[in-house]
Image 1 (cartoon, one colour):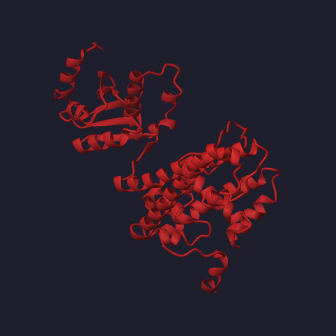
Image 2 (cartoon, helix red, strand yellow):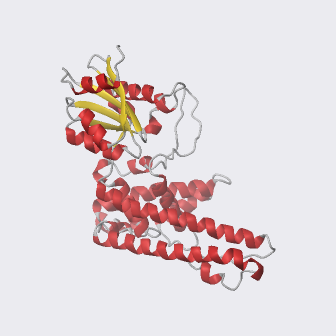
Image 3 (tube, one colour):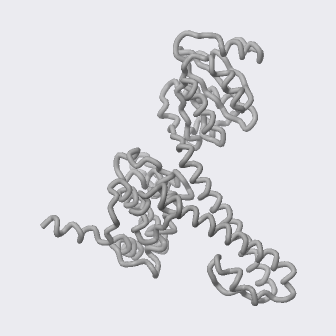
Length: 366
């Protein structure tokens, strides 16, 4: 293939061509690399362009309709939307599943673009395509993510205050993060007040901001996503978990069975079977890690001392009784998986949670 200059690249890209094309784009924060394949699989053009809307539109607007493959990333949302509006078929690959790229021994931006194009031409399913959420869903998720960042910052500050006090032979009492500022007002040693009072004030400010986010999340769930009310009937599931579940999955019909949700969120074991060897592995941890964390937190409440008596709690407690020292952890993950399936079923049916489902269907069966 003849190597083209930047000017020749731009001209060749906008000239009309014959036959369907496949384009692979390795998106960079400032510069993106692209590779164009003919229907025969031959490389027609390789080049680079700035990662800006103007540059992408100028390069691809006059190009015939093609299949474009790219990896998911910070810029993939607006780039895929722009190229789809132009008329191209866009495939957004799950980067962690494309082992030919992220495990390659000769990984370059140019090689990644070519690999994406070849995989999209052979079989798009090899890219494990994902679908971006709508702008509305993503904007609401940004509120949840912003709250998550503040919670993490507050936790770090609280741990810092506790650690400094402990180094002077004192110990602060256990309390909730929301009440930490008031509970520790008279317990900080005088010698440490110049150092710790500013940190405590920041904790109070973060707590107020977190509570404001939580009120906003509750309002969004009540007014814009009334389907979350059915999910909140499950003990341990509040507005935060219910809204995160609905916004992350976005469309309940994308799953043929409710049981598929557990695998989608990485709550099922990994598999590495070869011949007669099938080792027991941990969960896959695929999908959204924050939603998985929320479901695990709800499962811990269900199995904890304040969890009400339900069939789900009984099942988890029975599982925790067997299996050795890690049985409790496996029980929590198992309950989280069943909880994800249950929430999807409630979302689809829009019915209230029945603590003992088997008992509730006995009269109807009779």
